[in-house]
Image 1 (cartoon, rainbow over the protein chains, first blue to last red):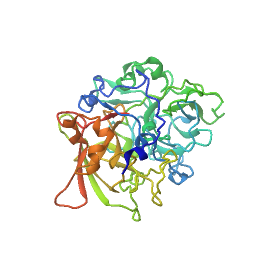
Image 2 (image 1 turned 60 degrees about the vertical axis):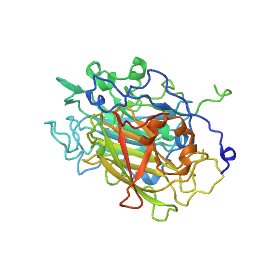
Image 3 (image 1 turned 90 degrees about the vertical axis):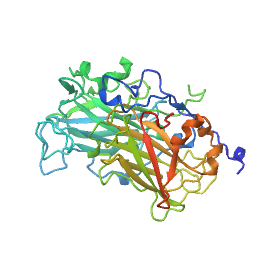
Image 4 (image 1 turned 120 degrees about the vertical axis):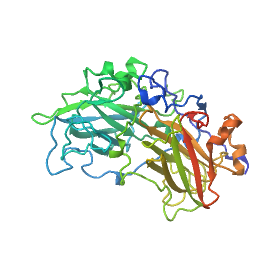
Length: 240
Length: 190
């Protein structure tokens, strides 16, 4: 094969600004110590393998998958909330048809997972998992209950701030994001090595949702806004 | 509508130990990338994820992205003038078991441009604050010697990116994914 004739022009994706992402190794979060590579990562130019990625259709999501309060016979216990926002790329363009998956503890801080043995009650009416796809404007919406904080074994008297795990697919395999959404004013932020692993203070603040009166529904549920930015293609000069 | 945020990508956080209630349920796992009608050489890759002490990582998730047998991705930004295998998606997702392994069924991808056949792999786990990206190449493939990404890897480390055929089982390959240590897999800064 003539390799020159097959070479393609690739529009690379933005690289991540220093300090905006956690390092792989962050000793206060003990589990990173044996799971972080210690050799230098190899920088590669972006190829089709990086700038393409799975694009899912609506067959991945069923009606009601975004409402975690209606998956069982009755409603779960806890404070009902609406979590909504937009998924944008780093050029500010909405990301439509992005698959979002969430999972979380119940209102008592317990996950419906065999590995979670924290002595808090399970809620028979709460699984704690949901999914949805963004619309044409990149908007999404979940209905759930506010998760509880819970203890873990990282260090003495360690507690995770209340959070909802988010998994997001963008346009490219390298815009893939798994993260956690937090709630404003949580007193546990200062003591949580997972949250604190992000070096830049402004970057950390991006993971804290905002209380939102507009999406709060009278007599029914509080609203929280959480916008998500995924890596997008480098801006061309006339866009910058 | 102006976003209420700056446009720096959102920070990653660990998937933690409990992602299995959503990401790797029976319904949401994709252990087979290639459907029964997919064209190409069918193969199975057994991944084994190990930590810095060589202990199997039993709570990792792997995601795989690959081209079809022609070396074409199912994506609008792949402008190569090649056919796309009918029904091809190219995505896989697996959780590791107690022994740190999981088996992916797929077909061997074709060459994408000047690159040798490879799978793109992203690794997620408790203790990983962000995913790691690596590639699985196929040991013995003649195109490996001219692959531009492999050329960037010091020769003594390229072996960590090679799936090895299982001599006893035709079509079966093994790939150890060592997060840390002497045999640490090469991860790419993408």
